[in-house]
Image (cartoon, rainbow, N blue to C red):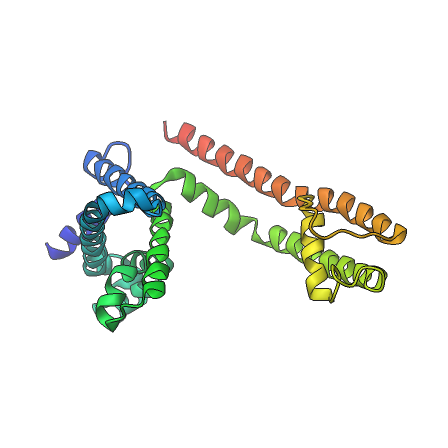
Length: 260
């Protein structure tokens, strides 16, 4: 009976099917609460709003932490209903180091840390408040869009790693060559290879901030070549991810048609 109760609880807490109204309602409630938390983190940085509604921000934070803490504890209690977490002790410990459980813990930890360590330093508290943005990652458990993004990144990680490696190699070569070309003529902008990498990133991404730029003819030629190569290389990850989305959406559509 206890095991059946845990399974029902997990079905309610996890992303629900369209037919499961209770689970869908819980999903909607949690997603709205997460988004409101993110909005609160953003707008409370406006000093006039924070000073006027400081107490309400505190109340909302306490309410949110209570909900997220209860969710974490209930999941920890019910996780033994799953086969891989079956053992009452080691199973729960294994669950606690899973990615989803760590995200859930990070969502509430910024509230409890100042209390546990008794730290009242203003900078420390600001950093911990910023960590509340980790609550946004909780959406991955309830949102189809977040789940889809995660699936695509997991399945296309090899192609993305190869593309990232190519970009890093090109950045190193471009920055090294540009340093030796421009250092003598423009030592303030190109003092070292690591500093030149800032120019390399801005050029490869075609952002071109204009704060650092070559002045020699050879440096300008190299800059133009790197900018052109950057356009092509940075289009690769976009193409890989787009193909991944198309593939996943096609699979889900076929599965839905088959189920219907």
